[in-house]
Length: 380
Image 1 (tube, helix red, strand yellow):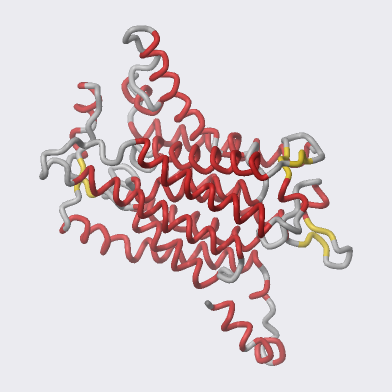
Image 2 (cartoon, helix red, strand yellow):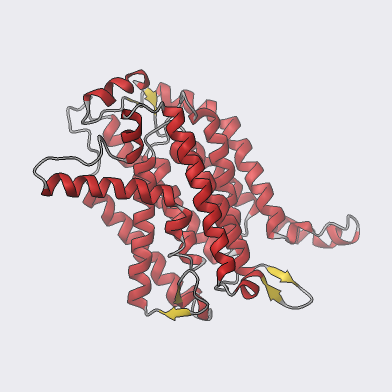
């Protein structure tokens, strides 16, 4: 929105004010971060009070008596706080990103789609006791249908339209390897489905402690701000080079605008963390975790870094893997468990770590994984 305004007055901005910075993706990314941060901080209390009035408080319940006792103090804490993050991201994106950009349009569509899906799931869970229904919300297969359907739509438009003239966009890129492997439509769609659905659900599983998923999302989104910028922005205008060409990375013109959306996610997560840190005044809920995870998966697909994503989001991978391992072992061993409780953060809580200790240590792991992912870019 503001970009179009700048374009309309560009003659005045150039000749009178000598202001050229609005062209730069990096400049607008910083402003997007600050805008979403301020929106989250300022609107956070209002949304929290509205959630309290709507009586959408949640009481965490686990299949573990000790864990239920440890989390009893969280009873009736309002959830669906992801609305704070979505508000910050969407407002900031409309203000500072080029909303005509094909990647930004799809990113907004994804946020709305998965936000609505998560909101329905949250609402069904929260109203279950009143209507004497199960607290499971949407069934797993119901959520997967909508997640897979979204991923197929995104993959089809990306492959057939956006990447039609971008050779690097139709390839699978391996870490440490200098050349891409060409993908057909089926392979591209399958990869997109796996990445978007897996990341969305992994972030959802990680959202189980005050500030845990929020802090880790902030770290991962910061990495994708860098990756989106490097995919398309110039390293040297004089030499007609991009960061991607210099580092032998996939080149995706226009991906830098998606980096502004990721910067808005970072700012919104920082703002939300103000209210979500221990002791949390509000929980994120599926309305926040599903779209945030899906957006990061989508950013990985656009920048062609699907196989780097498990390193960037190493904490989310570990959390999701702990659930799969626990469920698989439980079924095949006749009821035995590897962890005291899954996801993994609950295991450490039951082992004696305080909740802030678990959260901060997982943040540190997230930062280490992010640094490792960025280092691999130079090893091609």
